Image (tube, rainbow over all chains, first blue to last red):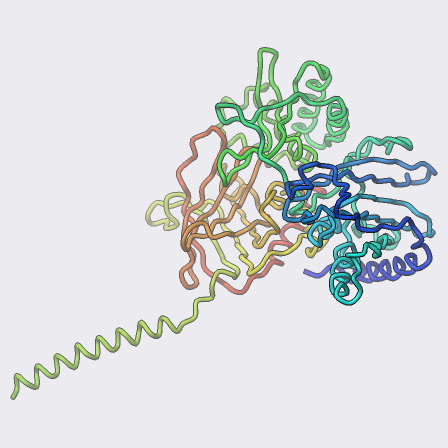
Length: 340
Length: 201
């Protein structure tokens, strides 16, 4: 289904303005593909065409203040998207506000392949004239210009301009806010916002979790930064219904016991008990009570996972689960979690 | 003479039957199967979809199977927002690529069953084995609901199976359907937009 015309028009306008901005402001640091023998991937196995991760830095200007927030996060690339020679390139994206001032920056050193650049384009919601298009355009010129081989080509910074909010309040932003959007470092807080960047489908490239001898994923303690982030997420749970208020109370109570109480645990990597099925979270317990266990990736990317497991605790504490089958519990929870 | 005529008549009849059968078979072969892509009206039942045989309809709706994957960003904004947030585990399934199918399902609110747990979603159809097609219709924290079926001509027939971690699954439901036209994704996006309004997001 096509987007509404206004969105398309604004995006075209954005592209045009972005191109104009590019013309006047393109004198940024050169971004040459690295020499094959000097790769800069963040993961050592990335150099050998295994899965690799790179660290991206983001900066964005807070609304109505001169402060900037700076954050770093990790992007993952499958081995199929790594350059054979380990070559990398600097990917830079800049958002120019309606007043022509810079409002957002993103910088990543990424594998110099079309697939990797397209992945980064998706991450930043760049639909055209992004890194992958630049890569493709260069490939067609290589035979005549030797563009990449002599390292003289630069990957142009990508400039975008968001549509004015007043004109299009429901239009999506042309790029996501930085991952790990809640909290903030470097330039001040971001007012405790819990907005998460929309997950781009196909972005998730992870290893399987490490399992114990029983075939169950091994959990780990929640880190202090994750614990703080959980607090923000719990605080953002809506209180529109009785069950939502109760689950928020339960989650706050578990969190209030402190990090050392170990009421929250994570497992890293995907948990697939069979090829077709996946586990994202569940209730566990010890002598001190319930423990909520979550996939450390999906807890931040599914808005209802936190509440879902909390509602299981609610059914347990109220004794309601005693009169319900497991199917009934799931149906009961899933029909209510969306209001929290 | 008479017996010869009778014999010839019998042979002729048999021959015609054989030829006719072959013609039918040829005709059947020449009726092009519409293939997998299409919009299917589906019903999921307990036991049977025939009330006369004691069957019970659990949920009914539409299943849209497309010829190729599509990006969520190509959907209307509200529908994209719904699928990314409310059905993230299903829509953004890790390592499974872009969706190539969607569904809408409705069931009586009095029914407390797994079928139709997710009223609308984007998902993926894959060939499970042979002609069997697999489509996941719900995915939760530690549960799922998966349909497996075969398509013959315009008909669709198979089973729907709930899964829950560390739990013995209930008996499979019966799934039946009929192709009603080419893939119509708008059935799902309109339902998602309605649902988003309903839950106040």
